[in-house]
Length: 211
Image (cartoon, rainbow, N blue to C red):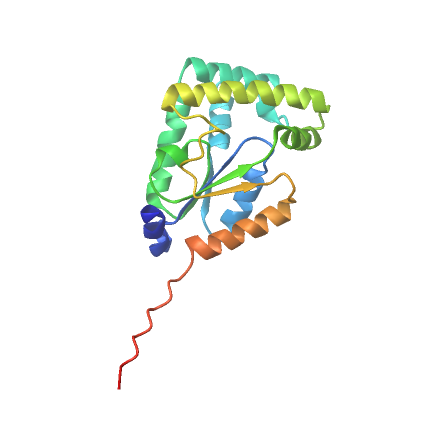
């Protein structure tokens, strides 16, 4: 809590971290929050996709991470941590500069400070959203999500020792999005950010003098 209060007291050092597994809507919401609060938006997933493109992958397909190329790149990352280490080092630089919103699975553990939000949802709900987003049959979306998340969790467990999706101790706020629409989630997050991150402490009232 002390780190959060310090960040709040220095608006130019504001750091928001948004995390959540695929299908929770974290990237769309993170971009909207960054725009609303005039923060620079950086995505760990986008940075990794750029590295995949440099390796020769075609990243233009909708839902790339859940497709065969995305899963193959996950195998590469599991075999060689250089991709993740490069991205995380860059995100840490941005975090230290401040005035940023980080859409990342690793920064809540690696950056000691800021305000960290985890968006939660059931596997079924997330698979439904991914199936609709990527125009996939529901069983196929379930299978792809399961494989992707198994390998992703292995990467972070091997690299940093945390359990993605299970260990929520770094987070200041956890929101279950199962029964909320995207606008409702955005409204809740704006209220939380306004109330905690950008709140202005009320001046202490002087004690009444005894006559």
